[in-house]
Length: 454
Ligand code: GDP
Ligand code: GDP
Image (cartoon, rainbow, N blue to C red; front, top):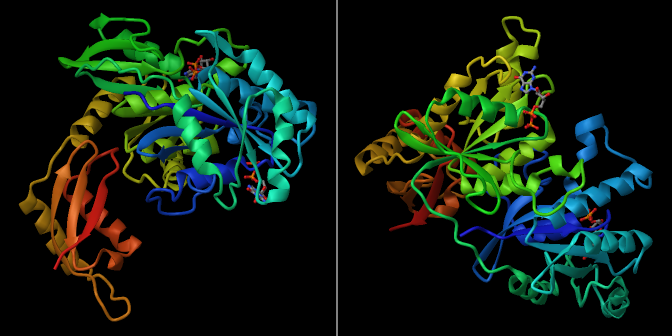
């Protein structure tokens, strides 16, 4: 089943990111407060009544940055353009749009504008506008502001749902309505091929890479366009293994899309990542790593998928002996929440090292599926405690009894301890490293779950 994608839209300051953070809760185990991964996340998973969905805060998408490198000033013509682009991204690709407005400021011209863009871009399916838009009136903290809510009917977006993202009130009814608005779930065609997605910002060379990868493989099984609703998949065989390349760049568009918007396929990237086992995150060697690159990487981690960083356009970089090392260090710094990820330097243009891309992706997938036996794990844990005793807090010290790998894909370890609360984050990271020293699980996040035991 495909997870529904929910997009938040609204002018700045209505509380989109506050709402986003409330909905997705604590970020997963990301070591540092790296900008662009925890506080600044744009993509995350939300959950309500056991239904999981992907959430995207379009307010954080800044298409202009990819062109000029500078954020835009509030109120400029470009700024309106940007909100327009964000609304279009949402309406083109999301399953449900949450249109956020602000009870304290009432209906503003910018809200009218957003409403108009949303309406204009909705399609009609079975006599109903699609995708559905739910109008969420935030900052309805008190009766005074809740009384303002009926005026939002004038936006023509149906019933307004008052909430307070700050206090967490009203969100229950709103989320019930959200669940009701989800489309019937479409079952993805299942096949046993290894699924590899090519993701990244516009213009980094995704299409060029795909063409190279397909070009070098003799045996294209069947280039079936649009096997699923969202993408153009290419089926190939690598060393006798069936592989599906999921191409975000070439994904079929839903309806008409304005030029410019088309390139910002963030929602499609999310879907590609969700469907894939391994994502090839393509970055531009000539531009360095950007916040957007970290956002995408953060999402790959959040949904427990594997990744390979592909530094493309290596031909266009003036090199001395240290450049590759310097770039790798930058990747390690910016993506310090996934130190296990392999980095390949390629040129889709000249073909340099492109032949290493699929073998690396398959290697990552192989390790993703690996299982360590219990004896092996307990030797690792034993050794870890000898190397580095867990430090004691408030007089009680952590004791590790034993561990076992309870699943693969992604690898998940259950570790029995005297008290899970005594597991300090740094010690968890240390144990993870010890496991990876025995078996690297290249490119794949591993999960450690601690359970109390006497
Ligand atoms: P965004 O630009 O739409 O992402 O808005 P932010 O989430 O950054 O919020 C803008 C401001 O509104 C911040 O100062 C928030 O603390 C505040 N805010 C967000 N939600 C609420 C709310 O429910 N009530 C009140 N009183 N303030 C809120
Ligand atoms: P996409 O938007 O990520 O699919 O990127 P494209 O594959 O369309 O490439 C964007 C631009 O970068 C095009 O002008 C390509 O010719 C160029 N390009 C792609 N790969 C390379 C490369 O390895 N080296 C150089 N110098 N240019 C490249």
